[in-house]
Length: 340
Picture 1 (cartoon, rainbow, N blue to C red):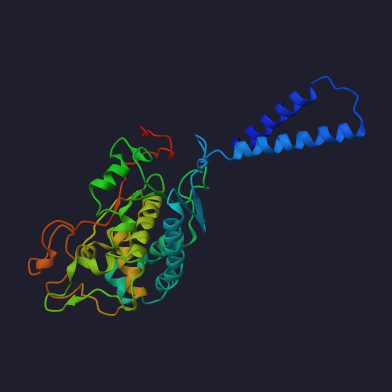
Picture 2: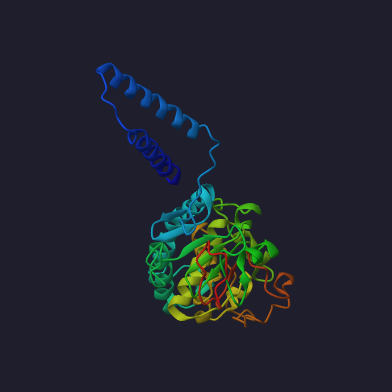
């Protein structure tokens, strides 16, 4: 744009200089020769300009970043290929949520619901959260990209997004590549790390992809890792983090599947990972779940591991998704500084 404008101005002044010369009365033949000379002169002048090596034109300071819309969600600064992947995941997610939402309205809820949410009285709230995810309702004041619906922000360099508590998120991503997304719950933003696209997570789980039960100890195997290594479910968990915080202010963040099962009904409804396990179980048409009642198998505290289960010992597993309830605002990308 600036290049075209410069050429137009340059040609204008060049022609003005020609016509500003004292004009003698011309014969018809002389007028034609003069007009031809000017046309030839302008042609070579423009050719000289365009013959110069052309640099790739970049947005001016304060210009726009790549922004892609998917329903009510916005994907920012991800590049065309990565943005297309996130859009495809969002569209796939909307299709998977229908059966899970419908399952919360049944007179008798499924084994998956009973396992991960315990009490039918929480079904309306679970339905509300999943419906919010499917429609993309606003969670924050309007901003320059949308009306306050969740935003997926890819970080590609330092200084794009951060806060005073955790510093620069691009640096955090590089220091811990196993954390591929972070929900900034107070802001309604999801920080997307480069590793989300590079560490080998599969996009969508195959059919009948279910958790495995160790029947002799009545527990899930492998802390639920078979369901947490898919980009689709990571995306779901991060959006759920935002909507749980928007509706309750809760920041429960338990990741191990067996610890999720042992949460109380209220804590389960406020823990994003429970939604992941529930929706994934409905999507996979899973039918095997541990018993959560009976001799010695009553619901325990989330901090009290099962002494008979070697997979249920020690601290919570590393979560490929994370949340940041401390965020108090997001710096606008491209400003080269971190908000305070």
